[in-house]
Image (cartoon, rainbow, N blue to C red):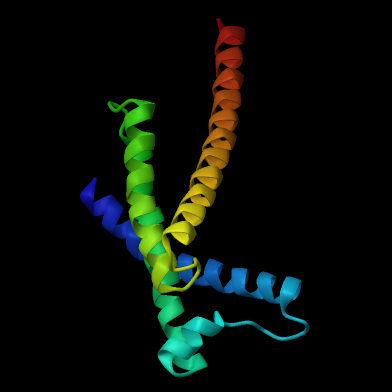
Length: 151
């Protein structure tokens, strides 16, 4: 399982970078007034220029991609309960997402900023979990009906 997690983590790096880049494009379309917003101004200021900020941001995106991808092996631990899988996956992804968001200036650097960002993360996590649960429940129901048809 470790080997699979490492491999997925390595494959997740370019996926995270690509997804992060797409997000900057979407944000630029929505609020960029015709300009590409490649990095948050505070990050550009902190790194002394746009290039250094974008490189650092790509590292952050890659870190997220690696973390989320590597942690996905948790869902294959069939002996574990869904509660244990969900809890561990949440802990790993939150433990990665929150520091990345802090260092990337994606959240206000205050207790309130942390609380708000964490609440948004939890809301998105719960929403995505419920969607995935409903999808898999429907797939299992479909498979069960096929099995019953054969019997």
